[in-house]
Image (cartoon, rainbow, N blue to C red; front, side, top):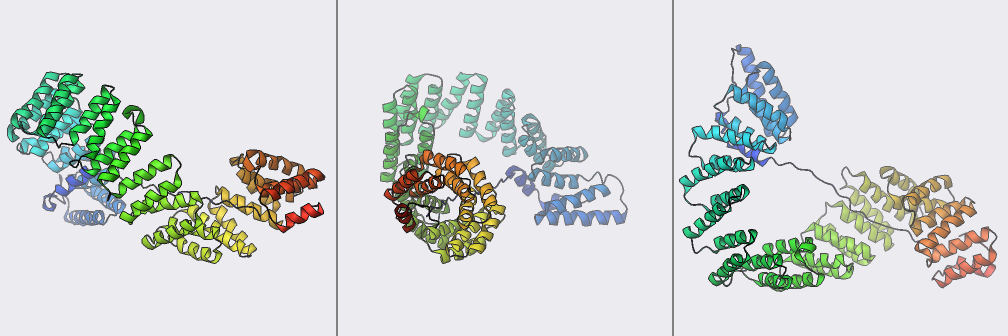
Length: 587
């Protein structure tokens, strides 16, 4: 009997989220009582004023409930009543900003500020939006305006300086940071910001002065010597860079982080082995947290050309991580990734299962285990693991789908029907996955002998997912076996072969459909293509080729391929009769 293919694709849903955190935080800082629901530059009659107030309050309620479109409609109506209401403009701009419509938001706020130039909330929101539009100088100007009324506000002063730096107004940025430093005293963050600006300006000496100032202020802080060493290294002064890295080791022999700095130092010098030895010392350090080590591991292994990390070195780092942090499940997942890159599926699955022993509530790890089970064609493993995953994540349709695949392969056809129905309850707005579920149900029902119902499900499946080539192939084959709708079967199998012209199983299906239509010469062409594309040892394909040759009156060749099919493992009684009686016998 022809072996039917099953494949489970990752049916993903990509969620695109926009988080305008700066915009939202600005809105939240505005006390409710500061918003003026009605702002009139001309006299409104009492009726219009009450209507405005009602619409404005209702708009704020709709906004709070998340009904953005309704809030926009209501605020637009407010502006029809009073075209100069800066409050309505502000609220409307806030909604547009949250929807990424920065152009509309900025236009509204610019007009609101022209009406009420003293309202700092309008300016702060507009500054946030200007940042999104990369209008850094304009944003800095707005912070300057706000600072006139609040000169001691360090947050606004810092934002002004940082935005001036982004706008490459370096001198003005330095002045702003200096003004802030006068208020705060020597400050690590400010000095580092100024150092970066001086480097951008090409004033290297001043950049050094900023770090040296930090060392003078706190000579026991090793981090500052690291900054100085990094700066020397960036300027090509390797001798002084090494001097200060070594000074950190003298001050803090247990400092693990300095090993990573030294690793980078030696790597830039081309001393790869020294670099790797320092990396290993950093990985062995108890002072370095596991997250830092994992981040560095990812950096090293994602850019091998630059880091000079070989497979052997990567494995050594993984083993160090396992030795130092045996209870960290993520290390087992990266070990699994290492094996997957080498196509060592059994070993990869072992590591994934170890990760689940430590952390069983990570759905993505379960899903990866299930896909490895499927790739290994370990149907018992897939059945067991998908059952466990369903218990932990009963709302994930993919786990039901993978369990249904295992049920089909294990010939648990009644259970397949049940699990498909359960899984379909959790499929939302995903016709592709819905079609794949129905394909599996159709397979189960076909195997249970309910052919007409199965064909109906296949029809629905390919209608939902016209690119489901597995369903198209299997349905076409079943139709050919039944001798029904052969033209339809030819169209479906032809579409599959056009997409996968070198797949022996798909070529065999198309050839068999043509065979059942009596187009033996054309069937011979496609069957030979199937044999030449890797199907030369497949007993089903060999038997089919013998059948085609028999119909073309090539009796000796037909018997030869029937014998090959038998020797390749085909033990069907029908094949035995073909060989014995030397004629084609339909199953």
